[in-house]
Image (tube, rainbow, N blue to C red):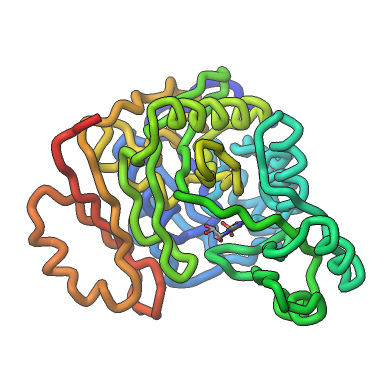
Length: 360
Ligand code: AMP
């Protein structure tokens, strides 16, 4: 179904997924006078705590999905592993944003890289891998070091194996669980950056300033804005984001992860959703990525992406959340907790945005 007219305050947004991203989307929607209905399989989903309604059901429970679709004015999602048939089903019954076609491209690393390379934007050299023999051929073509990743369902470094000088194809293939995969040339990068971009139903595009991202054990640790890259490189990154989001006919917020290698930018992946490296926008911009996504999918005009402060976003991981009172006592920092009860190792429990006066 296509979008008809902007949703008035009082309308209901359906969100698939009840994690922290769904929760922060619901909080932003609430500020705009919109209600949220969350659909998620886990009983204790953090987004339920701040939403008008929720439904606990499996993503393949089509009767439940039908009831959900009928109760909302637009459907969106907070994670990229929404099953394709679920997205297509909801798109027939309601308005889905981002579309199932955009989701499909972002879900499969081979389709994603083929699409981005087709726009003339640099990506790592890559080859599709469907078996051990394929992998041997791909290593011969792409060389070592390289990175083997599952085509689908990978996140925070899961489903990845580095192919080093002595790694055997058999070991790497076993390590990723013998699932359809992609082999990528290893990029020796100086920095990792990302771009948070939004596009509305009318085709308007808004792009935030560029954060520099630091990871620890493949999990995002900090995002620092502005990134210490030249103005020209930042503009090039933002232009690449505009090209990608426009070409996908995308509606909503997207995160685009990139490597900076020398003076060259290489796109790693796109996330069809609000993104952890965009959390700083909550406290350093008038309109956060969450509000921007709600505005975009609801047919509202996009908000300003102007940044009023420099900012470092620190993720609060696992048992670090036990120090909640310390975080809360830091003046000048925006404190965000996700309402998760159990602090497992590495689990994203919250974040703080530490602001300083804007420079650059
Ligand atoms: P991904 O799951 O694609 O976001 O990858 C997780 C992390 O692994 C990235 O943030 C990089 O630090 C690293 N990585 C992924 N792909 C490559 C690559 N082709 N070359 C070098 N490092 C990579």
